[in-house]
Amino acid sequence: MQTIQLSTICYLTVGGRTLLIHRTKKKNDINHDKWIGIGGRFEFGESPEECMLREFREETGLTLTEYAYRALVTFVSDDWCEYMHLFTAAACEGELGACDEGDLEWVEADSVPLLPTWEGDRVFLRLLQERDTFFSLKLVYEGERLVRAVLEGQELAL
Image (cartoon, rainbow, N blue to C red; front, side):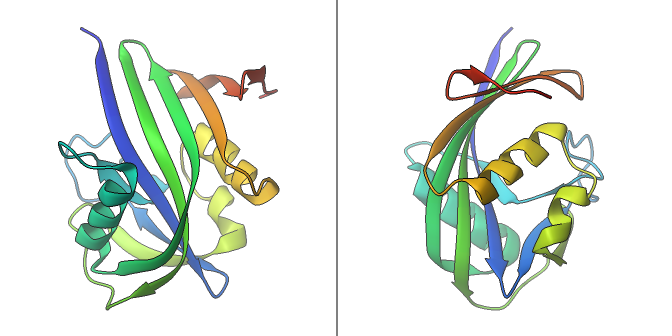
């Protein structure tokens, strides 16, 4: 059976530090022990912005006040496909709370690509730094191994 998922992710960077979640708490978590941005799956009828803002608030306790929709990332692996709407943010309000999916930590922005994460995350994190314009990226995995990356129809070297 083929599965399609819709999700969002957001990388909040303030004062040279990026808020990440170290996924350590959820059972049977495909992201277990990885460092990722804040996000989650759409609820019925939500726009990408509504989903991202809700997920960010639920997982961190923070309300984003300045954000940008930066990319659409398509993940493909076996019978599974996910369309992830990628955001960055630069300001928020509120108090950082606890997250039931992992540990929230502020990480020096330059160190983010060096942490244990998905190979494809390093690709889109680099593109976020290199580009100011919206982009579409397709990442194809075999298991946990990235085998193909396509930026706006052009194959990227891995």
